[in-house]
Length: 439
Length: 175
Image (cartoon, rainbow over all chains, first blue to last red; front, top):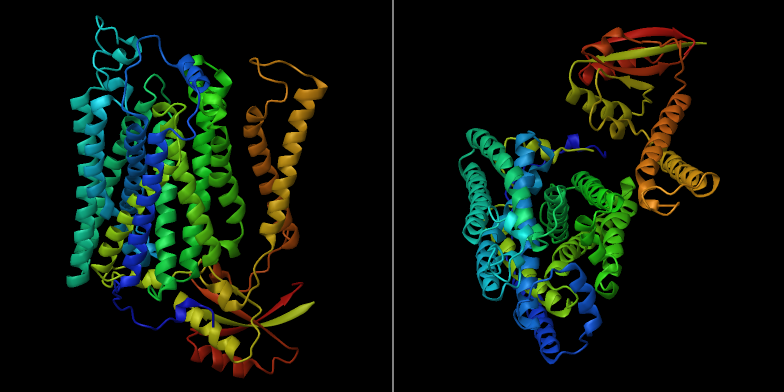
Protein backbone atom coordinates (compact mmCIF):
# COMPACT_ATOMS: atom_id res chain seq x y z
CA UNK A 1 0.00 0.00 0.00
CA UNK A 2 1.28 3.36 -0.94
CA UNK A 3 0.11 5.27 2.06
CA UNK A 4 2.66 6.36 4.56
CA UNK A 5 0.22 6.08 7.42
CA UNK A 6 1.17 2.44 7.58
CA UNK A 7 4.71 3.14 8.48
CA UNK A 8 5.48 1.17 11.59
CA UNK A 9 9.22 1.34 11.36
CA UNK A 10 10.55 3.02 14.48
CA UNK A 11 12.47 6.26 14.12
CA UNK A 12 16.10 5.56 14.93
CA UNK A 13 19.17 7.74 15.05
CA UNK A 14 21.39 7.61 11.99
CA UNK A 15 24.99 8.66 12.04
CA UNK A 16 26.88 9.87 9.04
CA UNK A 17 30.11 7.95 8.62
CA UNK A 18 32.78 10.32 7.43
CA UNK A 19 34.40 8.20 4.85
CA UNK A 20 37.75 9.04 3.28
CA UNK A 21 36.36 9.13 -0.27
CA UNK A 22 34.16 12.05 0.68
CA UNK A 23 37.01 14.00 2.24
CA UNK A 24 39.09 13.27 -0.85
CA UNK A 25 36.34 14.73 -3.05
CA UNK A 26 36.27 17.92 -1.01
CA UNK A 27 40.03 18.23 -1.03
CA UNK A 28 39.97 17.67 -4.79
CA UNK A 29 37.49 20.54 -5.12
CA UNK A 30 39.84 22.76 -3.13
CA UNK A 31 42.88 21.69 -5.16
CA UNK A 32 40.99 22.27 -8.41
CA UNK A 33 40.09 25.70 -7.05
CA UNK A 34 43.71 26.44 -6.20
CA UNK A 35 44.85 25.41 -9.69
CA UNK A 36 42.20 27.54 -11.39
CA UNK A 37 43.00 30.42 -9.05
CA UNK A 38 46.71 30.12 -9.80
CA UNK A 39 46.02 30.08 -13.53
CA UNK A 40 43.75 33.08 -13.15
CA UNK A 41 46.29 35.00 -11.10
CA UNK A 42 48.99 34.18 -13.62
CA UNK A 43 46.78 35.28 -16.50
CA UNK A 44 45.88 38.51 -14.73
CA UNK A 45 49.49 39.09 -13.73
CA UNK A 46 50.74 38.62 -17.26
CA UNK A 47 47.86 40.66 -18.62
CA UNK A 48 46.60 37.89 -20.92
CA UNK A 49 43.35 38.67 -22.63
CA UNK A 50 43.39 42.12 -21.15
CA UNK A 51 40.87 44.57 -22.44
CA UNK A 52 41.71 47.80 -24.06
CA UNK A 53 41.23 51.32 -23.01
CA UNK A 54 37.88 51.58 -24.79
CA UNK A 55 36.25 49.65 -21.98
CA UNK A 56 37.65 52.07 -19.46
CA UNK A 57 36.11 55.03 -21.19
CA UNK A 58 32.58 53.75 -20.90
CA UNK A 59 33.23 53.22 -17.24
CA UNK A 60 34.47 56.74 -16.71
CA UNK A 61 31.20 58.08 -18.08
CA UNK A 62 29.53 56.78 -14.96
CA UNK A 63 32.32 57.62 -12.56
CA UNK A 64 32.84 61.07 -11.26
CA UNK A 65 35.14 63.89 -12.10
CA UNK A 66 37.72 63.74 -9.36
CA UNK A 67 41.10 62.11 -9.58
CA UNK A 68 41.05 58.33 -9.82
CA UNK A 69 42.95 56.63 -7.03
CA UNK A 70 45.60 54.14 -7.98
CA UNK A 71 44.19 50.98 -6.35
CA UNK A 72 45.76 47.55 -6.14
CA UNK A 73 47.10 45.71 -9.15
CA UNK A 74 44.28 44.01 -11.01
CA UNK A 75 45.11 40.48 -9.87
CA UNK A 76 45.05 41.48 -6.21
CA UNK A 77 41.91 43.52 -6.57
CA UNK A 78 40.18 40.64 -8.33
CA UNK A 79 41.31 38.25 -5.63
CA UNK A 80 39.88 40.45 -2.87
CA UNK A 81 36.65 41.15 -4.71
CA UNK A 82 36.09 37.51 -5.55
CA UNK A 83 36.80 36.46 -1.95
CA UNK A 84 34.20 38.98 -0.83
CA UNK A 85 31.76 37.88 -3.51
CA UNK A 86 31.92 34.14 -2.88
CA UNK A 87 32.02 34.60 0.86
CA UNK A 88 28.91 36.80 0.88
CA UNK A 89 27.17 34.08 -1.13
CA UNK A 90 28.27 31.25 1.17
CA UNK A 91 27.48 33.16 4.35
CA UNK A 92 24.00 33.73 2.97
CA UNK A 93 23.51 30.05 2.17
CA UNK A 94 24.82 29.25 5.62
CA UNK A 95 22.52 31.54 7.57
CA UNK A 96 19.51 30.59 5.46
CA UNK A 97 19.82 27.09 6.93
CA UNK A 98 19.05 28.57 10.35
CA UNK A 99 16.39 30.92 8.95
CA UNK A 100 14.62 28.03 7.26
CA UNK A 101 14.67 26.02 10.46
CA UNK A 102 13.51 29.02 12.51
CA UNK A 103 10.54 29.52 10.19
CA UNK A 104 9.63 25.85 10.51
CA UNK A 105 9.73 26.18 14.30
CA UNK A 106 7.62 29.31 14.41
CA UNK A 107 5.11 27.79 11.99
CA UNK A 108 4.94 24.60 14.12
CA UNK A 109 5.75 22.75 10.90
CA UNK A 110 6.27 19.03 11.18
CA UNK A 111 7.14 17.92 7.69
CA UNK A 112 10.63 19.39 7.68
CA UNK A 113 11.93 17.72 10.82
CA UNK A 114 13.79 14.99 8.91
CA UNK A 115 15.87 17.57 7.04
CA UNK A 116 16.43 19.77 10.09
CA UNK A 117 19.96 18.53 10.73
CA UNK A 118 20.98 19.63 7.24
CA UNK A 119 19.75 23.15 8.02
CA UNK A 120 21.75 23.07 11.24
CA UNK A 121 24.86 21.83 9.46
CA UNK A 122 24.72 24.61 6.88
CA UNK A 123 25.36 27.20 9.57
CA UNK A 124 28.86 25.76 10.12
CA UNK A 125 30.19 28.32 7.65
CA UNK A 126 28.99 31.41 9.54
CA UNK A 127 31.99 31.66 11.86
CA UNK A 128 34.83 31.03 9.36
CA UNK A 129 32.90 33.11 6.83
CA UNK A 130 32.71 35.95 9.34
CA UNK A 131 36.45 35.83 9.93
CA UNK A 132 37.15 35.87 6.18
CA UNK A 133 34.73 38.72 5.75
CA UNK A 134 36.33 40.94 8.38
CA UNK A 135 39.82 40.14 7.05
CA UNK A 136 38.89 40.85 3.44
CA UNK A 137 37.24 44.10 4.44
CA UNK A 138 40.35 45.12 6.34
CA UNK A 139 42.58 44.17 3.40
CA UNK A 140 40.35 46.09 1.01
CA UNK A 141 40.89 49.24 3.05
CA UNK A 142 44.55 49.39 2.04
CA UNK A 143 43.80 50.29 -1.57
CA UNK A 144 40.02 50.79 -1.34
CA UNK A 145 39.40 47.90 -3.70
CA UNK A 146 35.90 47.06 -2.58
CA UNK A 147 34.18 50.21 -1.45
CA UNK A 148 34.68 53.55 -3.07
CA UNK A 149 33.31 55.32 -0.01
CA UNK A 150 36.33 54.22 2.04
CA UNK A 151 38.66 56.48 0.03
CA UNK A 152 40.15 59.04 2.45
CA UNK A 153 38.87 62.56 2.08
CA UNK A 154 35.87 61.52 0.02
CA UNK A 155 33.63 63.04 2.67
CA UNK A 156 35.86 66.04 3.28
CA UNK A 157 34.84 69.23 1.52
CA UNK A 158 38.41 70.49 1.22
CA UNK A 159 39.84 67.32 -0.20
CA UNK A 160 40.32 66.81 -3.94
CA UNK A 161 38.58 63.44 -3.45
CA UNK A 162 35.42 65.12 -2.13
CA UNK A 163 32.19 63.62 -3.40
CA UNK A 164 29.06 65.42 -2.20
CA UNK A 165 26.74 62.44 -2.72
CA UNK A 166 28.94 60.07 -0.75
CA UNK A 167 29.50 62.71 1.91
CA UNK A 168 25.72 62.87 2.30
CA UNK A 169 25.75 59.19 3.23
CA UNK A 170 28.65 59.68 5.63
CA UNK A 171 26.50 59.19 8.73
CA UNK A 172 25.89 55.60 7.77
CA UNK A 173 28.93 54.71 5.73
CA UNK A 174 31.78 55.29 8.14
CA UNK A 175 34.36 52.58 8.62
CA UNK A 176 33.93 52.10 12.41
CA UNK A 177 30.13 52.06 12.21
CA UNK A 178 30.33 49.71 9.22
CA UNK A 179 32.57 47.33 11.15
CA UNK A 180 30.31 47.44 14.19
CA UNK A 181 27.32 46.63 12.03
CA UNK A 182 29.10 43.86 10.17
CA UNK A 183 30.28 42.20 13.35
CA UNK A 184 26.83 42.56 14.94
CA UNK A 185 25.00 40.90 12.03
CA UNK A 186 27.47 38.05 11.95
CA UNK A 187 27.45 37.66 15.72
CA UNK A 188 23.65 37.57 15.86
CA UNK A 189 23.49 34.99 13.09
CA UNK A 190 26.21 32.87 14.62
CA UNK A 191 24.87 33.06 18.18
CA UNK A 192 21.32 32.11 17.24
CA UNK A 193 22.50 29.31 14.96
CA UNK A 194 24.61 27.92 17.79
CA UNK A 195 21.79 28.25 20.31
CA UNK A 196 19.25 26.46 18.12
CA UNK A 197 21.79 23.76 17.35
CA UNK A 198 22.55 23.23 21.05
CA UNK A 199 18.88 23.03 21.94
CA UNK A 200 18.37 20.49 19.21
CA UNK A 201 21.26 18.32 20.35
CA UNK A 202 20.19 18.47 24.00
CA UNK A 203 16.74 17.43 22.86
CA UNK A 204 18.31 14.38 21.21
CA UNK A 205 19.92 13.43 24.50
CA UNK A 206 17.20 14.27 27.00
CA UNK A 207 13.91 14.34 25.11
CA UNK A 208 10.83 16.18 26.30
CA UNK A 209 9.12 19.18 24.82
CA UNK A 210 10.86 21.96 26.77
CA UNK A 211 13.67 22.27 24.20
CA UNK A 212 11.09 22.53 21.47
CA UNK A 213 9.28 25.40 23.16
CA UNK A 214 12.53 27.22 23.93
CA UNK A 215 13.51 26.75 20.29
CA UNK A 216 10.29 28.38 19.15
CA UNK A 217 10.92 31.47 21.28
CA UNK A 218 14.54 31.61 20.15
CA UNK A 219 13.54 31.15 16.53
CA UNK A 220 10.91 33.89 16.71
CA UNK A 221 13.40 36.34 18.15
CA UNK A 222 15.97 35.35 15.55
CA UNK A 223 13.54 35.90 12.70
CA UNK A 224 12.78 39.43 13.85
CA UNK A 225 16.48 40.19 14.10
CA UNK A 226 17.22 38.50 10.80
CA UNK A 227 14.54 40.49 9.02
CA UNK A 228 16.41 43.65 9.94
CA UNK A 229 19.98 42.38 9.69
CA UNK A 230 19.52 40.58 6.35
CA UNK A 231 18.23 43.76 4.76
CA UNK A 232 20.93 45.93 6.31
CA UNK A 233 23.70 43.49 5.46
CA UNK A 234 22.52 43.61 1.86
CA UNK A 235 22.93 47.39 1.81
CA UNK A 236 26.30 47.23 3.54
CA UNK A 237 27.94 44.28 1.85
CA UNK A 238 26.50 44.51 -1.61
CA UNK A 239 24.68 47.75 -2.35
CA UNK A 240 27.34 50.08 -0.93
CA UNK A 241 29.66 48.86 -3.70
CA UNK A 242 27.61 51.03 -6.05
CA UNK A 243 27.68 53.81 -3.52
CA UNK A 244 26.03 56.53 -5.57
CA UNK A 245 23.17 54.29 -6.43
CA UNK A 246 20.44 52.94 -4.20
CA UNK A 247 17.39 50.75 -4.47
CA UNK A 248 14.71 50.24 -1.87
CA UNK A 249 14.18 46.71 -3.17
CA UNK A 250 17.77 45.70 -2.57
CA UNK A 251 17.39 44.06 0.82
CA UNK A 252 14.68 41.80 -0.50
CA UNK A 253 16.59 41.14 -3.66
CA UNK A 254 19.67 39.87 -1.83
CA UNK A 255 17.55 37.97 0.67
CA UNK A 256 15.59 36.27 -2.13
CA UNK A 257 18.84 35.21 -3.74
CA UNK A 258 20.26 33.82 -0.49
CA UNK A 259 17.03 32.18 0.48
CA UNK A 260 16.49 30.21 -2.70
CA UNK A 261 20.17 29.21 -2.75
CA UNK A 262 19.94 28.04 0.85
CA UNK A 263 16.93 25.88 0.06
CA UNK A 264 18.70 24.50 -3.01
CA UNK A 265 21.76 23.67 -0.87
CA UNK A 266 19.56 21.93 1.71
CA UNK A 267 17.82 19.93 -0.99
CA UNK A 268 21.06 19.00 -2.69
CA UNK A 269 22.62 17.74 0.55
CA UNK A 270 19.41 15.84 1.33
CA UNK A 271 19.58 14.17 -2.08
CA UNK A 272 23.24 13.21 -1.65
CA UNK A 273 22.55 11.81 1.82
CA UNK A 274 19.54 9.89 0.54
CA UNK A 275 21.51 8.47 -2.37
CA UNK A 276 24.29 7.43 -0.01
CA UNK A 277 21.72 5.41 1.94
CA UNK A 278 21.07 7.79 4.82
CA UNK A 279 17.82 9.45 5.90
CA UNK A 280 15.63 6.43 5.25
CA UNK A 281 12.56 8.34 6.44
CA UNK A 282 13.05 11.00 3.80
CA UNK A 283 10.83 10.29 0.81
CA UNK A 284 9.47 11.88 -2.32
CA UNK A 285 6.86 13.80 -0.32
CA UNK A 286 9.57 15.77 1.43
CA UNK A 287 11.38 16.34 -1.84
CA UNK A 288 8.11 17.48 -3.34
CA UNK A 289 7.81 20.19 -0.69
CA UNK A 290 11.42 21.26 -1.08
CA UNK A 291 10.86 21.38 -4.82
CA UNK A 292 7.82 23.58 -4.31
CA UNK A 293 9.90 25.90 -2.16
CA UNK A 294 12.55 26.18 -4.86
CA UNK A 295 9.96 26.65 -7.57
CA UNK A 296 8.06 29.25 -5.59
CA UNK A 297 11.06 31.20 -4.42
CA UNK A 298 12.69 31.21 -7.84
CA UNK A 299 9.55 33.03 -8.93
CA UNK A 300 9.77 35.24 -5.85
CA UNK A 301 13.36 36.16 -6.71
CA UNK A 302 12.23 37.03 -10.23
CA UNK A 303 9.39 39.11 -8.87
CA UNK A 304 11.74 41.11 -6.69
CA UNK A 305 14.32 41.37 -9.47
CA UNK A 306 11.71 42.60 -11.91
CA UNK A 307 10.14 45.02 -9.44
CA UNK A 308 13.54 46.61 -9.03
CA UNK A 309 14.29 46.59 -12.73
CA UNK A 310 11.00 47.84 -14.09
CA UNK A 311 10.66 50.88 -11.87
CA UNK A 312 14.18 51.98 -12.69
CA UNK A 313 13.78 51.24 -16.40
CA UNK A 314 10.46 53.05 -16.59
CA UNK A 315 11.42 56.17 -14.66
CA UNK A 316 14.79 56.25 -16.43
CA UNK A 317 16.39 58.65 -13.94
CA UNK A 318 20.11 58.83 -14.72
CA UNK A 319 21.21 58.30 -11.12
CA UNK A 320 19.13 55.14 -10.91
CA UNK A 321 19.42 53.67 -14.39
CA UNK A 322 23.22 53.78 -14.31
CA UNK A 323 23.07 50.49 -12.45
CA UNK A 324 21.37 48.71 -15.32
CA UNK A 325 23.24 50.73 -17.89
CA UNK A 326 26.47 49.21 -16.59
CA UNK A 327 25.04 45.70 -16.70
CA UNK A 328 23.19 45.98 -19.99
CA UNK A 329 25.75 47.09 -22.52
CA UNK A 330 28.08 49.10 -20.29
CA UNK A 331 31.82 48.32 -20.32
CA UNK A 332 31.61 47.20 -23.96
CA UNK A 333 28.67 44.95 -23.18
CA UNK A 334 30.79 42.53 -21.18
CA UNK A 335 28.07 41.88 -18.61
CA UNK A 336 25.15 41.70 -21.03
CA UNK A 337 25.24 37.95 -21.64
CA UNK A 338 25.36 37.33 -17.91
CA UNK A 339 22.46 39.68 -17.31
CA UNK A 340 20.19 37.67 -19.59
CA UNK A 341 21.76 34.35 -18.62
CA UNK A 342 20.96 35.20 -15.01
CA UNK A 343 17.26 35.44 -15.80
CA UNK A 344 17.32 32.21 -17.80
CA UNK A 345 19.08 30.11 -15.18
CA UNK A 346 17.37 31.61 -12.14
CA UNK A 347 13.87 32.01 -13.48
CA UNK A 348 13.08 30.32 -16.79
CA UNK A 349 14.91 27.09 -16.03
CA UNK A 350 13.60 26.34 -12.51
CA UNK A 351 10.15 27.60 -13.52
CA UNK A 352 9.81 25.24 -16.46
CA UNK A 353 11.80 22.35 -15.03
CA UNK A 354 10.01 22.18 -11.68
CA UNK A 355 6.52 22.92 -12.91
CA UNK A 356 5.17 19.39 -12.89
CA UNK A 357 4.58 17.31 -9.80
CA UNK A 358 6.72 14.47 -11.09
CA UNK A 359 9.75 16.71 -11.57
CA UNK A 360 9.58 17.80 -7.93
CA UNK A 361 9.42 14.21 -6.76
CA UNK A 362 12.38 12.90 -8.75
CA UNK A 363 15.78 13.29 -7.26
CA UNK A 364 17.61 13.58 -10.57
CA UNK A 365 15.49 16.49 -11.77
CA UNK A 366 15.75 18.24 -8.41
CA UNK A 367 19.49 17.73 -8.36
CA UNK A 368 19.93 19.40 -11.75
CA UNK A 369 17.76 22.35 -10.73
CA UNK A 370 19.53 22.71 -7.36
CA UNK A 371 22.92 22.91 -9.05
CA UNK A 372 21.56 25.37 -11.62
CA UNK A 373 20.09 27.57 -8.87
CA UNK A 374 23.32 27.56 -6.87
CA UNK A 375 25.42 28.47 -9.91
CA UNK A 376 22.78 30.94 -11.01
CA UNK A 377 22.65 32.82 -7.75
CA UNK A 378 26.40 32.83 -7.36
CA UNK A 379 26.38 34.53 -10.78
CA UNK A 380 23.65 36.84 -9.54
CA UNK A 381 25.98 38.05 -6.78
CA UNK A 382 28.73 38.30 -9.37
CA UNK A 383 26.50 40.67 -11.33
CA UNK A 384 25.69 42.66 -8.21
CA UNK A 385 29.32 43.13 -7.20
CA UNK A 386 31.59 43.08 -10.25
CA UNK A 387 30.43 46.06 -12.33
CA UNK A 388 30.71 48.30 -9.27
CA UNK A 389 34.16 47.09 -8.21
CA UNK A 390 35.99 45.68 -11.22
CA UNK A 391 34.25 47.88 -13.80
CA UNK A 392 35.47 46.62 -17.18
CA UNK A 393 38.26 44.47 -15.76
CA UNK A 394 36.32 41.51 -14.46
CA UNK A 395 37.22 37.94 -15.23
CA UNK A 396 36.25 34.42 -14.32
CA UNK A 397 39.26 32.23 -13.59
CA UNK A 398 40.20 33.83 -10.27
CA UNK A 399 36.54 34.11 -9.28
CA UNK A 400 35.75 30.46 -10.02
CA UNK A 401 38.96 29.36 -8.33
CA UNK A 402 38.10 31.25 -5.15
CA UNK A 403 34.52 29.96 -5.26
CA UNK A 404 35.74 26.35 -5.52
CA UNK A 405 38.18 26.76 -2.64
CA UNK A 406 35.46 28.20 -0.43
CA UNK A 407 33.03 25.52 -1.62
CA UNK A 408 35.44 22.75 -0.65
CA UNK A 409 36.02 24.28 2.77
CA UNK A 410 32.29 24.86 3.20
CA UNK A 411 31.52 21.23 2.39
CA UNK A 412 34.19 19.92 4.77
CA UNK A 413 32.76 21.97 7.65
CA UNK A 414 29.14 21.14 6.83
CA UNK A 415 29.91 17.44 6.59
CA UNK A 416 31.78 17.54 9.88
CA UNK A 417 28.78 19.12 11.56
CA UNK A 418 26.43 16.63 9.90
CA UNK A 419 28.51 13.80 11.28
CA UNK A 420 28.62 15.32 14.76
CA UNK A 421 25.05 14.34 15.63
CA UNK A 422 22.36 11.96 14.50
CA UNK A 423 20.99 12.85 11.07
CA UNK A 424 17.51 12.32 12.46
CA UNK A 425 16.46 14.43 15.45
CA UNK A 426 14.95 11.45 17.20
CA UNK A 427 13.35 13.29 20.09
CA UNK A 428 11.83 16.15 18.16
CA UNK A 429 8.11 16.23 19.07
CA UNK A 430 7.13 16.36 15.38
CA UNK A 431 9.42 13.64 14.08
CA UNK A 432 6.52 11.20 13.66
CA UNK A 433 4.57 13.77 11.71
CA UNK A 434 7.54 14.33 9.48
CA UNK A 435 7.96 10.63 8.82
CA UNK A 436 4.28 10.30 7.92
CA UNK A 437 4.25 13.40 5.78
CA UNK A 438 2.24 13.18 2.59
CA UNK A 439 1.82 15.85 -0.02
CA UNK B 1 -32.40 5.89 -10.62
CA UNK B 2 -32.14 4.50 -7.16
CA UNK B 3 -28.89 3.41 -5.65
CA UNK B 4 -28.33 1.65 -2.37
CA UNK B 5 -25.39 2.28 -0.14
CA UNK B 6 -23.85 0.76 2.91
CA UNK B 7 -22.49 3.62 5.01
CA UNK B 8 -19.69 2.97 7.45
CA UNK B 9 -19.42 5.78 9.98
CA UNK B 10 -15.95 6.45 11.42
CA UNK B 11 -14.91 8.71 14.25
CA UNK B 12 -11.20 8.97 13.62
CA UNK B 13 -9.03 9.83 10.66
CA UNK B 14 -6.35 7.21 11.26
CA UNK B 15 -8.89 4.46 11.85
CA UNK B 16 -10.60 5.55 8.64
CA UNK B 17 -7.39 5.33 6.59
CA UNK B 18 -6.61 1.85 7.91
CA UNK B 19 -10.18 0.77 7.29
CA UNK B 20 -10.07 2.00 3.70
CA UNK B 21 -6.95 -0.04 3.05
CA UNK B 22 -8.42 -3.17 4.60
CA UNK B 23 -11.80 -2.82 2.91
CA UNK B 24 -10.18 -2.32 -0.48
CA UNK B 25 -7.76 -5.13 0.35
CA UNK B 26 -10.75 -7.41 0.88
CA UNK B 27 -11.81 -6.68 -2.70
CA UNK B 28 -14.67 -4.33 -1.91
CA UNK B 29 -15.07 -1.32 -4.17
CA UNK B 30 -15.59 1.92 -2.26
CA UNK B 31 -18.01 4.31 -3.91
CA UNK B 32 -16.75 7.41 -2.10
CA UNK B 33 -15.67 8.74 1.26
CA UNK B 34 -17.17 11.87 2.79
CA UNK B 35 -15.18 13.78 5.36
CA UNK B 36 -15.62 17.09 7.17
CA UNK B 37 -12.16 18.22 6.04
CA UNK B 38 -9.51 17.06 3.56
CA UNK B 39 -7.70 14.03 4.94
CA UNK B 40 -4.02 13.70 4.10
CA UNK B 41 -3.19 10.56 2.18
CA UNK B 42 -6.80 9.65 1.45
CA UNK B 43 -6.36 9.98 -2.31
CA UNK B 44 -3.65 7.36 -2.28
CA UNK B 45 -5.62 5.16 0.09
CA UNK B 46 -8.67 5.28 -2.16
CA UNK B 47 -6.53 4.78 -5.24
CA UNK B 48 -7.87 7.93 -6.84
CA UNK B 49 -5.98 8.83 -9.97
CA UNK B 50 -4.28 12.17 -10.09
CA UNK B 51 -6.26 14.98 -11.59
CA UNK B 52 -5.21 16.22 -15.00
CA UNK B 53 -6.40 19.70 -14.13
CA UNK B 54 -2.82 21.07 -13.87
CA UNK B 55 -2.21 20.19 -17.53
CA UNK B 56 -5.30 22.15 -18.50
CA UNK B 57 -4.13 24.96 -16.24
CA UNK B 58 -0.81 25.18 -18.08
CA UNK B 59 -2.58 25.66 -21.39
CA UNK B 60 -5.03 28.19 -19.97
CA UNK B 61 -2.01 30.10 -18.70
CA UNK B 62 -0.39 29.91 -22.10
CA UNK B 63 -3.60 31.23 -23.69
CA UNK B 64 -3.70 34.09 -21.19
CA UNK B 65 -0.08 34.98 -21.80
CA UNK B 66 -0.48 34.91 -25.58
CA UNK B 67 -3.67 36.92 -25.41
CA UNK B 68 -2.08 39.53 -23.15
CA UNK B 69 0.99 39.92 -25.32
CA UNK B 70 -1.04 40.01 -28.52
CA UNK B 71 -3.44 42.56 -27.06
CA UNK B 72 -0.74 44.93 -25.85
CA UNK B 73 1.49 44.59 -28.89
CA UNK B 74 -1.46 45.08 -31.24
CA UNK B 75 -2.99 47.99 -29.33
CA UNK B 76 0.16 49.90 -28.46
CA UNK B 77 2.30 48.85 -31.39
CA UNK B 78 -0.08 48.89 -34.34
CA UNK B 79 -3.61 50.02 -33.65
CA UNK B 80 -2.89 53.21 -31.75
CA UNK B 81 0.86 53.72 -31.37
CA UNK B 82 1.80 56.22 -28.72
CA UNK B 83 5.12 57.28 -27.32
CA UNK B 84 4.97 56.96 -23.54
CA UNK B 85 7.91 58.03 -21.42
CA UNK B 86 10.23 57.97 -24.42
CA UNK B 87 9.94 54.20 -24.65
CA UNK B 88 9.46 52.26 -27.89
CA UNK B 89 5.85 51.54 -28.85
CA UNK B 90 6.34 47.88 -28.12
CA UNK B 91 8.08 48.10 -24.77
CA UNK B 92 8.12 44.54 -23.45
CA UNK B 93 9.16 45.19 -19.82
CA UNK B 94 6.12 47.44 -19.45
CA UNK B 95 3.89 44.63 -20.73
CA UNK B 96 5.04 42.07 -18.20
CA UNK B 97 2.73 43.04 -15.30
CA UNK B 98 -0.37 42.93 -17.51
CA UNK B 99 0.81 39.68 -19.11
CA UNK B 100 1.33 38.17 -15.69
CA UNK B 101 -2.09 39.25 -14.46
CA UNK B 102 -3.89 37.93 -17.53
CA UNK B 103 -2.00 34.65 -17.33
CA UNK B 104 -3.22 34.22 -13.77
CA UNK B 105 -6.71 35.41 -14.69
CA UNK B 106 -7.09 32.94 -17.55
CA UNK B 107 -5.56 30.12 -15.53
CA UNK B 108 -7.77 30.45 -12.48
CA UNK B 109 -10.99 31.10 -14.33
CA UNK B 110 -10.24 28.28 -16.75
CA UNK B 111 -9.51 25.92 -13.88
CA UNK B 112 -12.64 26.85 -11.95
CA UNK B 113 -14.87 26.48 -14.98
CA UNK B 114 -13.24 23.18 -15.96
CA UNK B 115 -13.47 21.85 -12.43
CA UNK B 116 -17.15 22.77 -12.12
CA UNK B 117 -17.94 21.29 -15.49
CA UNK B 118 -16.18 18.01 -14.80
CA UNK B 119 -17.67 17.70 -11.33
CA UNK B 120 -21.12 18.62 -12.66
CA UNK B 121 -21.43 21.46 -10.21
CA UNK B 122 -23.74 24.16 -11.41
CA UNK B 123 -26.15 26.65 -9.82
CA UNK B 124 -29.22 25.20 -8.09
CA UNK B 125 -27.78 21.71 -8.08
CA UNK B 126 -29.35 19.34 -5.57
CA UNK B 127 -26.57 17.86 -3.52
CA UNK B 128 -27.33 14.40 -2.21
CA UNK B 129 -25.96 14.03 1.28
CA UNK B 130 -25.62 10.45 2.38
CA UNK B 131 -25.11 11.31 6.00
CA UNK B 132 -25.36 14.89 7.22
CA UNK B 133 -22.85 14.19 9.99
CA UNK B 134 -20.06 14.02 7.40
CA UNK B 135 -20.29 17.81 7.36
CA UNK B 136 -19.68 17.92 11.09
CA UNK B 137 -17.42 15.40 12.78
CA UNK B 138 -17.90 11.98 11.18
CA UNK B 139 -16.17 10.23 8.29
CA UNK B 140 -18.51 8.30 6.02
CA UNK B 141 -17.39 5.45 3.80
CA UNK B 142 -20.02 4.73 1.15
CA UNK B 143 -20.11 1.36 -0.57
CA UNK B 144 -22.61 0.73 -3.32
CA UNK B 145 -24.92 -2.26 -2.87
CA UNK B 146 -26.69 -4.27 -5.53
CA UNK B 147 -30.48 -4.53 -5.94
CA UNK B 148 -30.96 -7.08 -3.22
CA UNK B 149 -28.43 -5.70 -0.70
CA UNK B 150 -27.25 -9.25 -0.23
CA UNK B 151 -23.69 -8.21 0.67
CA UNK B 152 -24.86 -6.01 3.52
CA UNK B 153 -24.30 -8.41 6.43
CA UNK B 154 -20.81 -9.22 5.24
CA UNK B 155 -19.98 -5.55 4.67
CA UNK B 156 -21.35 -4.61 8.07
CA UNK B 157 -19.04 -7.12 9.66
CA UNK B 158 -16.07 -5.97 7.63
CA UNK B 159 -16.63 -2.30 8.46
CA UNK B 160 -17.27 -3.02 12.12
CA UNK B 161 -14.10 -5.08 12.36
CA UNK B 162 -12.21 -2.15 10.98
CA UNK B 163 -13.46 0.35 13.48
CA UNK B 164 -16.74 1.70 12.11
CA UNK B 165 -18.88 2.97 14.95
CA UNK B 166 -22.05 2.21 13.03
CA UNK B 167 -23.07 0.84 9.65
CA UNK B 168 -26.24 2.12 8.00
CA UNK B 169 -28.07 1.45 4.80
CA UNK B 170 -29.28 4.31 2.69
CA UNK B 171 -31.14 4.65 -0.56
CA UNK B 172 -30.61 7.56 -2.87
CA UNK B 173 -32.57 8.48 -5.91
CA UNK B 174 -31.15 10.49 -8.79
CA UNK B 175 -27.56 10.15 -7.91
